[in-house]
Length: 165
Image 1: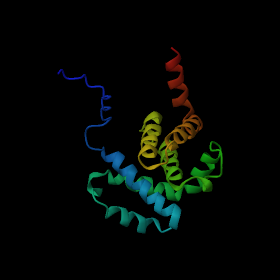
Image 2: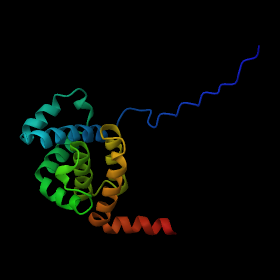
Image 3: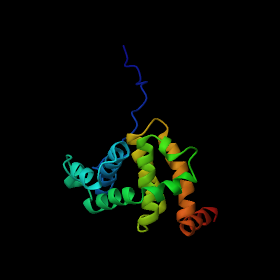
Image 4: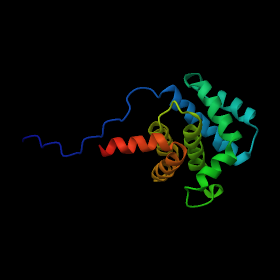
């Protein structure tokens, strides 16, 4: 009797083999904090203290976490105004996870110029894949792509021109 060939499909390779970056961990914790804020409207300091108690907080970029959480909460109305121009429903009707992810992505597009717009969008998409609904990452990608064209028009236009050449 001969061995039959292995007909089972190969398991897809893991996309990321190393540990999460400190910035990614900061975004995850900020998302958890924003989720808490969107549901409870608790004080920023209370939420930040709660997040600092989480396992592995020491492995995150705490300065970026602080900027993201405080900035998203402080600028929530402005972020929602930007998002409202690109979403298909009121931001209050978005799931709290997608809403938080969109807030983080748009806040980084507005305030973290050192982060390329494609990276800001991709990081938000990865958050949505990890924490959001089944196709939430597609929605996040589309909304933030439109928001990036508004918030960083020169950078987006340069990237699009480079693709055409």
